[in-house]
Length: 338
Picture 1: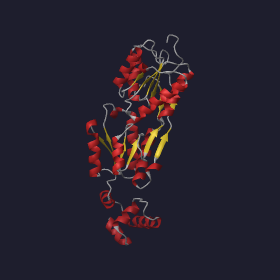
Picture 2: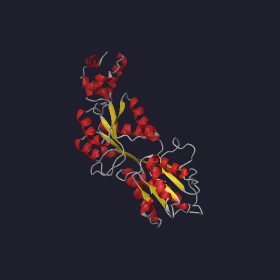
Picture 3: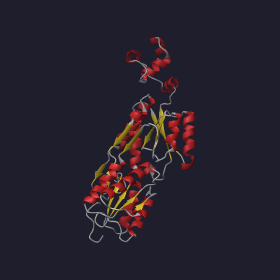
Picture 4: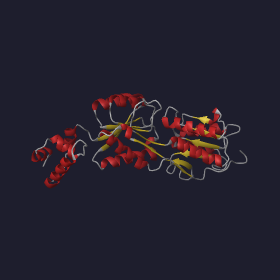
């Protein structure tokens, strides 16, 4: 039995039957139960393509992603994408990644929206001032931001508490007696990096410590940049006794630079990195600010975007999860030689 036959049997339109089968909120519960019962009794199974045409949807969500060379080997990125894909597969939907060059990012958004190739988009690596989010909000295209931005309108977003995570890391270092603490940051145009830097400065200011500009290194979003940043910090006199790195990609390079320089990590210099390092430096037990349940976070974002598409207000779709400080072997009291 096809959709038309089921609709004729029920005396309803194909659109009403399709919407009932797909859980649309505008269909009454009584009608939905009647349609579902008839579908079960007749052995009806939906044709995904026909269903999409009937309701004007592609049943595909996606992200336009300016991939960095390390992204496809980044376990955190893959966990989040895996969570999204898994959640959508259960609903017989798909998730696609459209890799682009940075120069072609905005034209790709405009092309995707005009062609209605997906039902909604996940916007990743949000910026402090993000033209992608401003554009999607202006044209009314469904999206969820993986991270926050400065926008004078309600929008759906999912994020971890950047301020709290950095504060936890610094409180740990301060409690051990560290006073010369450096920070290695991603580009500060990225919202997470700006928030983490602001928290770093505010926490140290509250502790009565001033931070010299030489102890703040930014534009580090990969291993090479993290490695170079640590080399710069080690050349200082006096050098920092502790380093906080605001992203795990730069963190891998930072730890490697310390090891290559013959530094006893955690004894000569302490280091805390934001993000899991378990699959990247398995022989070093790094103290980290973890974003737990990355796969669950991906699934949550997929569910939130579907809720938005189905009519839930954007202002009610905002999730802030808490990071966790995972104590490893790379933090201790400052060395007497420091």
